[in-house]
Length: 414
Image (cartoon, rainbow, N blue to C red; front, side, top):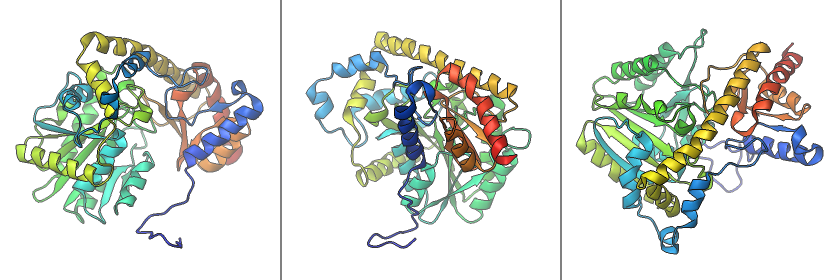
């Protein structure tokens, strides 16, 4: 691509975001045909059955009771003291791993991804993630002079592909002394997959095996959807497995309040390290703070204040959790409805357990997506498949569209 004035520096900029472009087409169709006749399965936020954004009323009450000083003052770069006091509990719940843990506030989970890549990889390095991945991972990496390599996430039996995971780690570590691995779970975006306890154990065994002397692995665990990965307490039970790992494996957990607390626009998140070495933890805090100062400076204060108030008041916290459980149940019913309807329609999906998204693998995914436009069904083609946001469509729609998707695939691919 030729640039007029800007420097490319490895960027490939199309000027068009697929998710928002298709979402705009869906909104246009709604205006023309009516909301009840259009399926907008593009939105990565929790909507009710009428297509309205769900915002936890218990969190709104807290926001309404913040003072001007609480929401307008600059926050410290690493986060407000209160936020740093409660963030381990917010992220890990009852399942805090053993080791030294430090934290730094970030603007949502995206900020934690950016800082981890910046601090724990070199310009020109490749970052490893699965072949099904949230596309901004690549945008973030290339923007700061890195690139993304992938492994096949599932084998032919739809199990997590441990051999390819291990092979790709070794391949990259043969060329790099350090490697950042981005692993989005539980309720993976875009597939909805959550590893079993046995699979987590196997993944950690691979990390230990590959982290040979002189090599460093930073395992970035993106838990953005953990509060809608089924039961939010049970979804955290695997986290202690990341305690007491070898010193040359650093775990960084990316926490976001966007989904679990419906704080999408407040951009409140954190990055937390887990390490057996205090010096590495202290270094983490210094580097994360420096990287923050060199990009967004400090994060939004009001989200930090609101989360602090919630987690320091057990009665309020239970109100939030009780309200959220209703929506956890709603999302689970949608997930179950889609799974049952997909089986009835012989529609293949990637393995999924919970979360906001389901992925349907297919050939010619862009063409299939455009074919579905004719039925006023809007999904996102993600390179090898379609991403369906069950977070934004009703249970009835989840039962209705798998047969239509299967029919569209047949029309395009025969």
